[in-house]
Length: 186
Ligand code: XMP
Ligand code: MG
Image 1 (cartoon, rainbow, N blue to C red):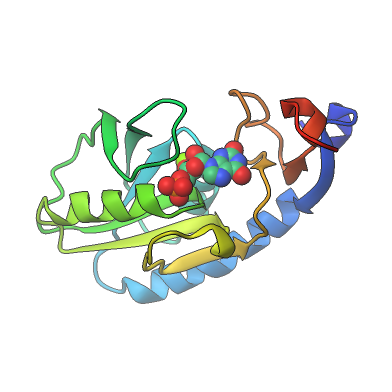
Image 2 (image 1 turned 90 degrees about the vertical axis):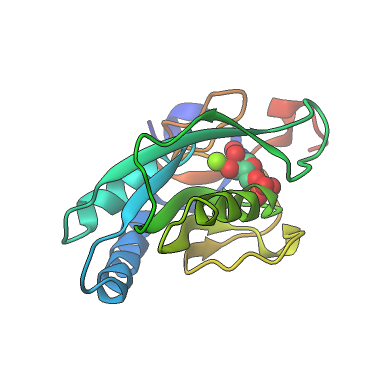
């Protein structure tokens, strides 16, 4: 599905599918150069990272093993507290392995800083983060991110795996959701 199928649900397309894929190819070259000996285990964070993982993994010119976690912040309705509940854990034992977390977006950074520490505590050899999008002005904690696709403004975006109420994940592009969709001011 692309933006033309969504009527007036979106205000602006921030990054087209072609831009996302071109940027991912550049990131893949960096990642390959940074892991010359042993490919890292790619750990995707469900559900948002599904599209990034699919495209990044296929772009990489080495064996790309994938594993998945699902996490949620504690406290429904409240702001991200940084305390995270694991809904689905890894299948793999990561002790002694290089791990590359693959994410769709970093907002406050609370989820990822928790996740990075959690994976390090399991004895991973290294834990790095790769994210397609980042909102630098929304960061609440300092998170060391090795690979960033695009920095974007503090706006609610959907598409390329990102959802609003579970919709829009299958939009090919990344776009800003029109406020009328979620009852906000136009
Ligand atoms: P942190 O802990 O960095 O959490 O605040 C990041 C998670 O918040 C969600 N998120 C978004 N989802 N559009 C979305 O569809 C957005 O603009 C957005 N900003 C943050 C997302 O689940 C991400 O993993
Ligand atoms: Mg996510």
